[in-house]
Length: 269
Length: 149
Image 1 (cartoon, helix red, strand yellow):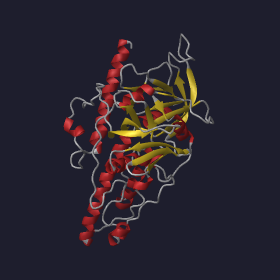
Image 2: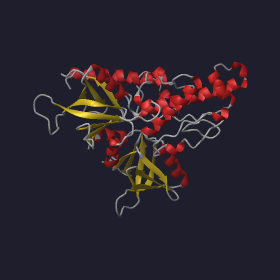
Image 3: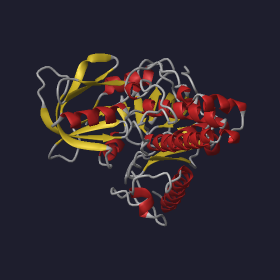
Image 4: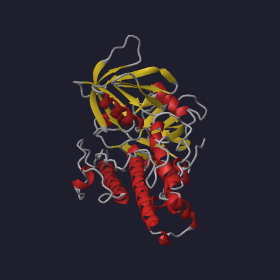
């Protein structure tokens, strides 16, 4: 399958913000041309996390990544390798390899595991939707307060209350590509939220994307046991879905996957 | 550059944000428009021959420019090579606009900017940081303003 590799490599090395960087030792896998027959070896690489993409370079100054791990649908776990501070990136599908990485200390290991487990596009999308909803609610309560001025509290808010049309829009980002034009041009909307998905006259909560992966690895994305399908398949509505429930649900899936993985370890896979 | 193709192929089989049969051309000399199944999944655009299960290719949609071209047509190009365009001819102007809007929102960078925007707005309005309850308020990627590493 082709990939726009040149552009991907450019994205890796351009100065858009990286979410996490650092040296890690990467375990060499069995069929790698550097692999030995006995024992495991590790290669020190410079890792750069941008969004849901984990790039690795031979050196920190290398102009091109030697590799990329697309992180969508992965789980990140501490692992009981012979090495201390080791963790693994694993994928759902049967027979998929794991990426075993070794940090140089407890703190860096924890920071990487934290950054990688929340690196997926899906996770980011959920957070954004939740904030969108919260902003909508904040605007509504602000509008309600405006109707009865005696209820207004802090002086900071009075500024907004007296001039609802002047809710300032955040200054435009420097990068003009992909996604810029849907906001920044909308200006201010009295009494309402100004944001990327704002439709004139009403704010529509976007539908929840269907569940991508399940603990059982089924391609249809059937929900994990114990959770109602309605929660997952129906379009999101602010009354029925809340982010912390989904956050917990992701956590449940991680627990289930870990259990599965540990069982596989016991069986000697 | 090595990459986990297997996982990318798996991603291509996941439910799509958007999928349609669209005529498409690649930025290669002599390339013509061909009917493809085009599928948007997270920040990747996969394209398949209409009768095949495995995609011919994938486009990572970061740092790309989505341009409305002539009627029913839009293109995707990348910052470092703006003349090399992937062209898509839709069945209708409406479909074309829908795809342009969807693709413009389909990058991680866009989500990041949206998040920072909402966070800032909520903070200004309520005085509270909405990310604190999720324990992610200190993460570098959510801070206001660009940061260089």
